[in-house]
Image 1 (cartoon, rainbow, N blue to C red):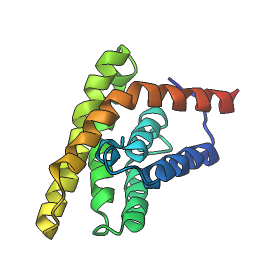
Image 2 (image 1 turned 180 degrees about the vertical axis):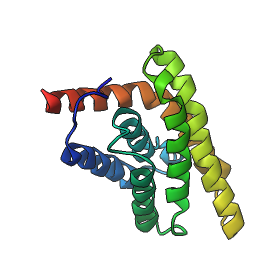
Image 3 (image 1 turned 60 degrees about the horizontal axis):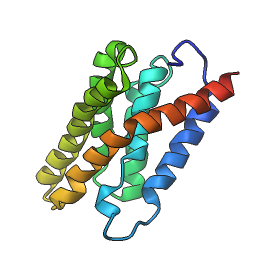
Length: 161
């Protein structure tokens, strides 16, 4: 965990941009519904590791950026990111004290909450999204979380040293 280290804003923004690009790169139709939520996982990682510098407002703004790029109802992803980040902040003290498997089990409901907010807002707005596009990313993101968090942690530690 890198909570006590000061990670530069530039590094945080760079990882957010890279994860956003990973979300925007087209995938073949067969595997597209399985695309992990790289951007959401990156936001959650920074909220867990740098809470004094990346809190609810930063998460909401990151979500608004996603809304603009995806042309979704404004602040749909902003609200979902804020809800997920709030949930993460509440369990942050436990997250890094647990083994990787338990961390993954703790992140899974947070990712479900994120997707549920998107599901709810889409329903209120009358938008129809296939269930596979909504819930398969939760599974792939949950499975990828340990590797993604490890990668971001190594990048941050390299920058701090």
